Length: 445
Ligand code: FCB
Image (cartoon, rainbow, N blue to C red):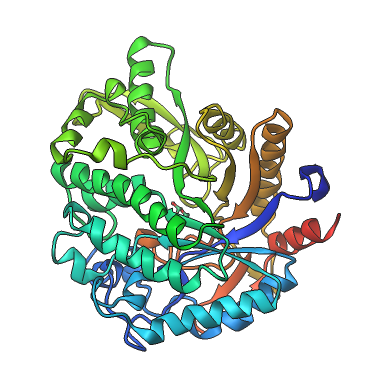
């Protein structure tokens, strides 16, 4: 895998970002607080007590950062709208200055021949909606549809590619079940209600975009991990199947009309407590593409002590394998396996790898960053994408996570995922070796 043309002319290369992780400007020009603005103020929730109040100051630096994209030969830019910048209270009054920011951003992209790919929701729910129950409140269906309507009617003329949600499994699992992400809620009821409402919004939001922008390519993104059992025992195999239902199938299958994967994960039956008559028909949507976001492989073992799942993941450091700063095993074949898995669903038309990348301890030496480990990670994963494509899987794009080092949620600024290094004191950007390699790869036909 040397040349990008091995992937064909239509293959989309890009980078992905998310509003809260880069924008900063958390309270200016009328923006309302989001659940992340509130969560970062809670003691002990974020490593180092970090927060995203300033982050990469992308709100102010966007024009230079878009020029940087152009310099890197990156033609597709995935970003997310901040809901509370656009509708400060989550519902009702729209903030024109918030819309203006995205207007400027989109114009800047188009002037530089960069295609914008927009995600409606990348985890930063308006706090005012969380105060009313957030994702656990069925009213979110209406709130979300209003938000989707405003974004798609306003920006549909300039955005061809839309993604409804970013990784619903992660924001409901980490945010409403484990309490590790905003809004920091725990428990099965919070999880199942928010999961059902997210699955509904995934389809309902897409319908709103379809109505406003008939020519749009509409997708949604899904986190996934390649799972393998610890041993060949029946118990570990079943444990792996349960984790697979939860981590890899919970949100995609209802969108394909297959319902929730209840037969492989019994406790999911209780998600039907939150169903209303007619929901079955609302959950499916005929997406033009799906985004898959894969970083690693996980090894699963049976465990009596873990409630609901009776299964646990054996983390990379316990297995003595090479891993990133996130303690995620480096295992490129995982991406091939996931592309094959989703490619085999008959309802999935097209797959875009909307996130893949790695955090390694970058050191600045004489003003440069020689991040060979990241460069290799990218090369090896991109090679697995090509393998899947050559096997006939309908994979049509690859987006690196991410352009800039940024606020990595509960881990603060410690993990650096960027192709571009950010000095958070001065906001200086330095292209890493991996960024230079990507630029050359993209520039080289
Ligand atoms: C994904 C998120 C993204 C980023 C990467 C490392 O789960 O979508 O915002 O945090 O992981």
